[in-house]
Image 1 (spheres, rainbow, N blue to C red):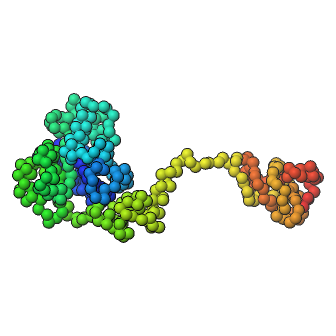
Image 2 (cartoon, rainbow, N blue to C red; image 1 turned 135 degrees about the vertical axis):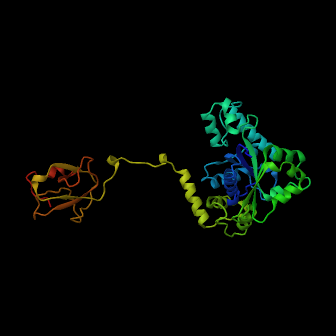
Image 3 (cartoon, rainbow, N blue to C red; image 1 turned 90 degrees about the vertical axis):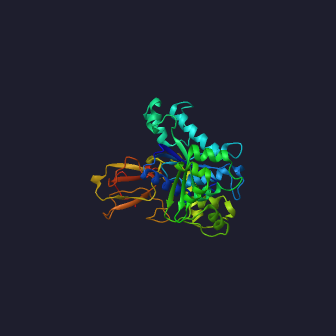
Length: 373
C-alpha cells in the first residue's frame, strides 16, 4: 500500500521545542521511505495559538523564535505560523485541512501563485517543473487525492483519543479517516492493542502508521521547563541556542546568569546586528603610517627622490630636546641613518632610498650635502 505524496505535520505547544520533537520527523520519514509507504515531500511544525491556554505556554512569538533556532540545520522541516495568526484556538482537523487544501490548490494553480512561507520546497520545485494538468497524476496516481497532510504524534496523543470529551467524533473521523496518523512510539509500548480496542481507530487502522523508536528518548518540554525553573542545566536536551533564548528572555522562571548560555547568546546577538555595511574600511591613502622605519643608506647614488615629512614639532628620538627633521645620507660616520615619519606617499616602494626633509625646516637644508646632525 502506498500513501503517495505525504507532508507530515506536528501540532503542539513546543514550549520549548526539544530534540525529541524534531527527531520524530526523521524517524517517520525514514520509516515511510524504507517500507515504500509513500514519499515524504515535507515536514511542518505548527505551534498552537496563545488562546490554547496550556500551563507554562509562553507567547507564540517566543515559541516561533525558539523553533527557528532549533530548525536552523533542517533542510526539509518548516514552521507554519498560520494557527498562531488566527483569532483564537483552532481545532487540529481544521489546521490539517487548511494546509492540505493550500498545498493542493497551489499545485493546481487554483489560488494565488505566490506560495506561503511554510510551503515545502519539494512542492514548490514540483510545481515549477511540471505542468499543473499532469502534476497531480504524477504525484499520487490519483487526481482526487493529491498530497496528503498526515498528523505526526506520539503514543500519548493516540491514547488521548479515548479520553471522554477531549476529542469530538467529527474531529477524529476527519483526522484519522481523511488525513491519517504517523505515530512514533517507544519500544515496549503496544499501540496496536489500543487501536484494536478503539472502534474508530480500528475502522481506519490502514490510515495509522506506527513507527517504533528503539533509541530511548524521553525528554519533554515539561522536563526542560522544570530544570530551567530550578536553575539546573538543561544542556543536551535541546539546542544550545534555544536555551540561550530562554535565559535571555527569562522564560519559564529562568534567571540571567553568567553562563555558557549567555555567552552564546551574546555571540548570536552581536553577529545578527553587524553586517558588512557596518564595517568602515579606510583606503591606504588615508591610513596614518606611524612608526614606520625607513633606512637611509650611506650611498648618495641610490637616492632617487626627496619626500616631505609633515608632522608637529617635537623632540627627535635621536637627539632629545632638539628638533631635527632633515636626514642626509652623507652624514659622518658613513652608517645607515634611520628616521620615524608619520606618513609616506602611496607611491613609496619599501627598500627604496629616499631623502627626508621637514617642511618646517626645508629652507634650512644644506644643498651642499653637509650633515645637519
